[in-house]
Length: 547
Image 1 (spheres, rainbow, N blue to C red):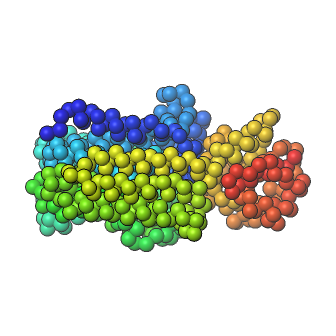
Image 2: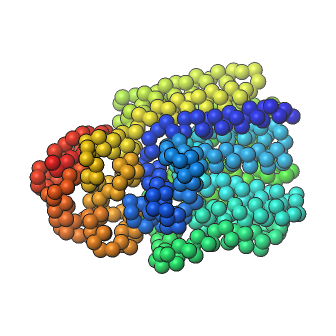
Image 3: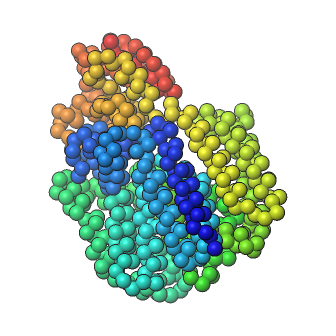
């Protein structure tokens, strides 16, 4: 039995972990800078229906995350990094509450307490709770849908179907139809694993859940289609079907990558995860098996996609937490000592590997552009190896020692990541430009690449000189004169784009050009008249000015 004060201590500790240093880093590109600018433009224009980025319609994702960020900023009367990341941290904390609720009901206090602690302090969850990502928000509705179906096995009222409909509806508003696909695939896999239709037949008032889901999600889609007639064709065909079935998004990856990330992200709880999978598959309530079935659905679905990013696997983690909770309970009761030792040995090897990768011989090939993180990796690797070794020799497996000590290592790594601000954010570039632009209102041009945070930190619209990339759809909806000024599209018309850039550069206005420093001697840059002058270099980027 876990006494009440320990539960309070757990959730206060989780809140401290998620909220205390939430605003320490600059907003990183591409995701954080992009989503912050979209939320900012919602507030600036007063248009909460159609998301816009850099003045162009941006309908790659539904608006739930933008609404959350803009709402927090509006309520607090200030825009800040801490508030921008608040929805992700709050969603992660609420996911912990859902996990604890269902695990306590099915597996008991010990499994619920340690399983929630392991989930909340695990490597992947800790990192994702501090980054502005749509998948961080999606994990909450997925966990909510799972909790609703599990709750519905005990209760015949309207609460479970209502929670199911609201959860899936909000998930669709967060990331689209995938929020409905994941529960459907999870239930199908559970039927397959049990060789029975009972998991599907046990869903009560499914029609009511569908009605609630449509009531939550459908209005925005209808209103957006009326506002932008091209919306559904772009959103459904291009953003979902083509991205899933083709490599158009240029995000390839091996088919097994999400399975590997789903395991690796549970550091340092690998032993408990394995113990939970082995021992919890047949536990009487079926909670562990159902969670693993849904997690397998997430992993299989995104593994089949031709477009892969590491954070896509994020919704699988709350579903795997039930297996980890069962494994923690087995360790606590002394029934899984081998799993405990295996987990610590693997963590020891990970620490040694992390320290070894920081060696000067391997540093460049392993860290690449992030070589500044190598010293932090060395310290973290040594600490991880030492802590894993100490935990091996404890008389009784000390789950709290592992949780707190490795949380400290993860916090150290994350604190050290602030050194990446010059590489991952345009904040300092924008500050240098604004400091030099004494009269205000100068034109800023972004050359090649994609620096979403530049618009946000420069507090103005940016001229894009190069391929429009993901802004192509929004660019196509602009009036011709506006499109030709703000998008110097070299992919479709290089000569015309370069000619318009020369006219802008040689015009009466002060113009700043943000480029990769290595491109400064490129013919296209050197051909500009008057000759560009460099005012600063930040990381691998440079800022040039025409006068």
